[in-house]
Image (cartoon, rainbow, N blue to C red; front, side):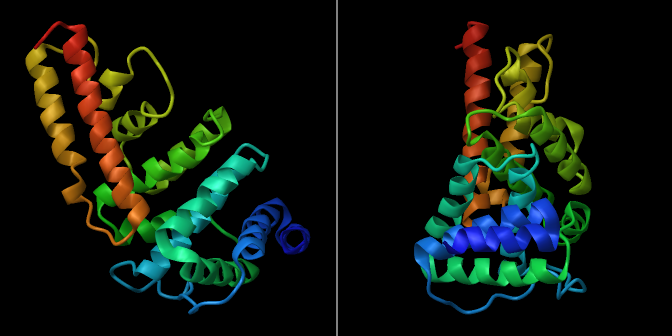
Amino acid sequence: MIKWVAAFIGYFLFRFPGAVLGFIVGTFLDNFGGSGNKAKSVFQEYTRQSVSPADFELNLLSLCSIIIKADGQVNQRELDYVRQYFLSTYGKEKANAIFRTFNEVIKKREISAQRICAFMEQRTRYEVRLQLLHFLFGIAQSDGQVSRAEVEKLREIAGYLRVGRNDFESIMAMFIEAADNAYKILEINKNATDEEVKKAYRTMAKKYHPDRVVTENEAIRKGAEEKFKEVQKAYETIQKDRGVS
């Protein structure tokens, strides 16, 4: 019952985005209830030189909500993907506190992808932003496919995060099937020599090695491990196709 009331209130206060966020928050509170320590507002410390865990969590949830509504519909599997992440990563009490604080934030300020990404771009390393984008692609793909509207929204977010085009295409290739995915992941073309393939692999492996992702956020750390494995898999695929041992 709470989730539908939250969605109804959110719709009239914030139109469609608020309805989505209200549904997420309401569903989470319906399932787990209780209270926790209130996290800091994502909009309160824009003068900080680094992003705190509390700020990161709320920014992450904001971007999650933007991806969920990107194609104009609320998919239950995408909602479950986000809820399950926060539950498994932070536990019931802290996840509940994050959702409650987030609900208070959206009552005071409209969520802006550009503003959030500007905040993150100034306070996080490039490797972390790459893994953040990887996680958002995971949400979009959780219902079985990444729609064109979701791709465009993800591309927009990548631009705000100052993620390079080649890096964006590399991450996208991990979620959208195509014949040349292995090459896209390594950011090379099919005409690359064997030596160029090896060089690209070493470069990408270094760029996406989990040790380079300095963050306290579990989703980002897991994303780094997944992407590193995809880089290895892409290299092995190319080697196999070329008959190189």
